[in-house]
Length: 233
Length: 233
Image 1 (cartoon, rainbow over the protein chains, first blue to last red):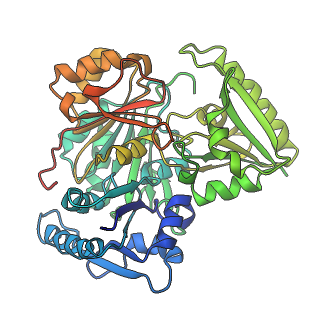
Image 2: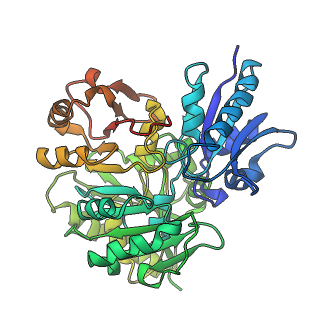
């Protein structure tokens, strides 16, 4: 009998923001798999490190962070092949995913390659969005408010139109797009309602009003913006 | 010294989807507070039940689920006053919140009333959105895709415009708005890409293609829709 592929969200960074289920599955795993940006430590593995049992077999996918299709997709091909070998041998494989597996996560690429051939379970995790909201003291959405999640690399016009059409906005993957995003929010007169958050829930977390944000943002940074439309709050 | 108000997300329903931090804080709590729909058991308390210590003092807010401002806001006034009494006496109060405290949660009303006077910590939780995606086997958003979260009670025109403007859509609080939402999705030709989910992660969970959804939906139901725009998946 084949093993099961288990995609586990390990949450935003603080290991205590893993779910009980994630912790149990990782601690019991004989094989784990995770992505690492080429040349760096895997963030997902660092979050789960204390839960991984000694002797656990680890499959590392070295994924370059580039906007191009290749060589990232080849790295997932290789990773999926290694995972399939374990599954074929009857061993479950726990894939460690930053945040949540199905929310801007690389697990989706493994899922697309393996779901037809193997049993799959996905365990949701705490996302960076609600973590940033918690750390910034910023309620995200209430009652009938609309929340829109936008990736920072989107074009300026697109960002502007989408920010105008929602009460609450989370802009992910700010990184090198920070100055473009600031310009859009500023032009809409919304800078005073926006917060900038880096590495939420980690020891070196940064939480600032957008007006005080640094010039340069890391990839794991976010801008939250709420228009406070709910008259009951 | 005053106590601390701690808003804790207990996740979508399965108690194992609580975070390690939520579990630790609830188990250590001498006072917990939570909303209950008038006349019913509190869902948030049911999720956390096994973690609550014997002898823990419990503050229950009986909140009617009506679209009107009252008497719900009076219930939060009363609850906030009881919580403030505990905080003034130097006792921390752990507020139990379904899902995440700042994501369509009632904790926002307590937060608005108490944040100026007391220290507050918010602990994020797993939301129903990523849980529904996990249970439906439906990746939510990848790369530069936009995700929009819409409450079901929004008017038809508004729903249609927002669904058109996003690659992925989560429609919350479906309940009695199901037939209106189905009509909108159908008119857009997107029914085949939509899933219907009830009570995700609980034993009586329902996961169906939207075309097979029942005629009547409970309040805790959701529709997920993805247009599969990412050519890499």
